[in-house]
Each structure stands twice: as structure tokens, then as C-alpha cells.
Length: 147
Image 1 (cartoon, rainbow, N blue to C red):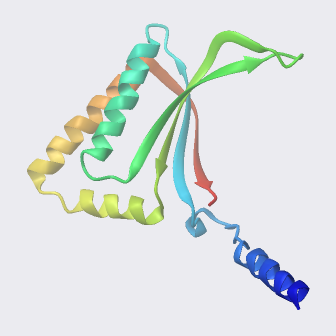
Image 2 (cartoon, rainbow, N blue to C red):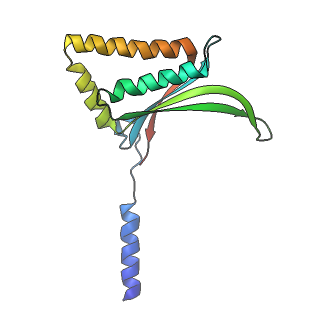
Image 3 (spheres, rainbow, N blue to C red):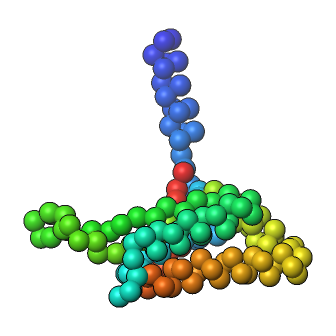
């Protein structure tokens, strides 16, 4: 009897842990993200690029966006799997809590007054200009982070 109970409980846990893997981006039930890889411009700096990521985060979070920005540094690995000391690329992972969180933010943005929209655009353009001064995007991807 105890053996039957244990098998029943284990099978229930296995079934409950069955996750659906989406076949399209629209079916993503996890968190969605934009991933940007960039190289520093000749006159760009790490400090300026990092300031842009902070401005980017503040822009969304000050407007109630359920999002986080994860800046990171990329280093090359040689043939012997040794990490090179020189920074190769910088990247930003912009992670929304869910598709719904992104849609809520778009709806919020679309319902702003004309004056609010102008202020939004001014702040948006400021962080984009800061990025552009310090880096050049070399790759951009949309990502579904599975739960």
C-alpha cells in the first residue's frame, strides 16, 4: 500500500512538472526579453554605456513597466578555453515579466496625453542617444525565457 502511495505521489509530481515549450514567440508563457549585443564606439566608454543602461531602466520603471535591464560584459575564449582579459562586446538583456507586462506597458504608453507623450519621447531619445554615443549594436534578438 505504501509503495502504491509513493508511486502515485511521484507520478503526480512528474505530470505537474510537464511544461509546454512554445513553438512561436507569441506563445511564450515565460518572460520575454530583448537582447542587444554591441561594440563600443571609438569614442565610447564603458561608463557612458553603463549610464545608458541605467537611464533605460529608469525610463521604464518610472512609468510602471514590469521590466529589468541586465547589462553585461562579454569576453572571448581562446582555443584552449582561456578567457581573454580584454572586453569583446557589451550587451543588455531587457527582461519583461511576461507578454502581459509588455502589453500593459504598450497600452499605458498609447493612452498618454500629448504632453506626457512628448516628455516620454524626450526621455526615450535621451537614453537612446547615450547608447548611440557609446556603442554600436551588432546583433539584436527577441528571447523567450522559459519558466
